[in-house]
Image (cartoon, rainbow, N blue to C red; front, top):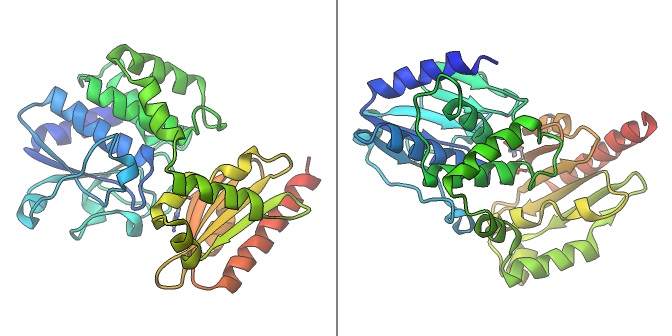
Length: 321
Ligand code: AMP
């Protein structure tokens, strides 16, 4: 990956623009918001005369990283558009129509849609925030880092590495974090936001540990209905806080959390410690990383089909060990 070459390309585009809009994927996680806020703060620190807007729906659980903006169609049309952390165009979260061929894309997910006038994808990077660190701390970089940028990028890296637990965490990740820490990063404050949950979500966590189905192949599955969400008094997006729970249970190799949507479909989050799960997500119209992916399925029957496919994948994984 030629970081220097791409840094020069994107910097040239930013220099030409008076106004810049930064977008990311829907149902954002800390890396989506952290990279979005981080890049805005880098541009603000480097080019204070430019205006930068962040767009997209914002869950209240992530406002500690930063806030989104509201703009008019005219302001949107007059801006350079940068899309971060979003592998496929239908998942770009934007209230205005986006022409994907006319944007700058920066991502670490495997390409689902090849899009963008300029596209930089490094699947070896733990996070999009880490990619931005490599731009800003690159040898030929002219970009500046502020405390605000460093805090947002750190939150993004911590989020996507599962607090430095996942295999995508590398020596480069720690090198970038070490540079960020020179800018007064609130390590404990960010950790506090990441590990604490409202009482309602904690009670749901107890329910999941109690009720998840565990197969003999080490596949765990939980299906939450709209009624369950009502019972626990939680919003759909708060269920992101409980996706990783089965990872702490001995003998579970991969797992799925299905959450019923108001229209009766199910959002599914797939996670794994070995068996490949993104091919299963892709079979059902979704995508993501080999060990962390997602999809939306229309029926309970399809949900059970995904659980069966997870069992096949876990079986193949176990027999290859
Ligand atoms: P999530 O389970 O929402 O945290 O997402 C994990 C990974 O799967 C991320 O890389 C997402 O971009 C990807 N992903 C989740 N849901 C979908 C979907 N419906 N379509 C495509 N990719 C998805």
